[in-house]
Amino acid sequence: MSQPAGGARAAFLRGITRNVVALGIVSFLTDISSELLVYVIPLFLANVLAASPSVIGLIEGVAESASAFLKLASGALSDRFRRRKLLVGTGYATSVAAKALYLLASSWPVVLGARLGDRVGKGIRTAPRDALIADSTPPEARGRAFGLHRALDTLGAVVGVALAAVVVGALQGDNGLLGEGTFRALVLLALVPGIAALVAIAIGVRDVRPASVAAPAPVEASPGSSPVASRPGLRDRVGAFPAPFWLFIGASAMFTLGNSSDAFLALRSQALGIAVRDLLLMVIAFNLANALVAWPVGALSDRVGRRGLIALAWGIYAASYLGFALAGSAAPVAFLWILYGTYYGVNEAVGRALVADLARPDLRATAYGILNSVTGLAILPASVVAGLLWDRVGQAAPFWFGAACALAAVALLWFVRPVGRERERQSAEG
Image 1 (cartoon, one colour):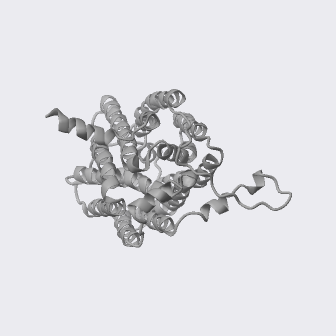
Image 2: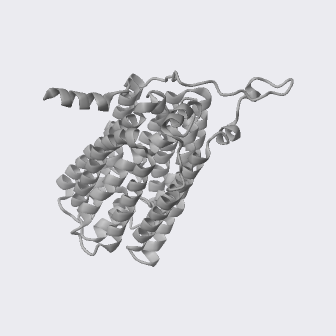
């Protein structure tokens, strides 16, 4: 009886390396820190600082989009100099420092500054971190590696939101509005795991040079030019990606136009009658669904392919947003949060693995930078439009718009035709 269990465990762990585990622990700790705050920040803005949904949408959109170019630049620098750990550590440290600004927030511009600093840190670290996971993993195990990382990341979110629920329950019970003192206490608590994540990076993460990396073809230098000048620049790197990669980027951009900040899910839930503590309990269920789905679906994508699973994820997203648009009471809100978590679990691991399939090893961080930059830039109009729709049309309008964009993105995804599995592997190996 123990043999099948051991075999299944070995199948899930095959190809998982030290760096994957270490970066998973870093994300686990960081998500504890982030999720203590992320769903109460819009409530702090609305309940304490009296900011309108349009202002909240502007803050979320600017904060996410401001990091977009950093993601591309950080990815390109990481590929050029192979110093992924340094950029990863710098990004996480920037986010920790930015969280301390919330302790000083007495108006929404200060919150904007803190959110901006946090997202700048994310912009610095994301592409090098994902590339380091891909570098540390054999091609046939990428889905498992990204799935495990996503599962640990989301488990940290579960712990973070659970701690937030405990603090909120202890300080203000089932009060429907967030108190200022409760928010300050959450900020202080969030700094502890954030600092622990920096220690985990220093101890556990190592730069690696994957054995599969082939030296990129040299660019012919003109007589008298220096060796540095003959290196391929960012424009040359961008031109080296295949058509399926760019089609996937386009479909992702369309999807993101309707993927406004989760702040609107929190505001919509509160408007339907959900108290702050109960909202956080629902977010725990959302993260549990995310964590339970991510690893096995990532492993499944190694066997059945990625595109169909990404289309499934975007379809689930559309269904959850339609549910939030149609909801007339608090009754379906918990189920909709779980459905939304299922979308997250499928999309994150499989999408990142597909990017690794479509990019050469020496261009992986640039590929992640391109994806993150394009989607990051799309988040600004997405969140601004969502805020304006909420204010001028109605609370359900942003969710109708998001569902429509997701379904349009599924249609575009049909045209993404990845090469066969063997050719994918050869392309990824250079």
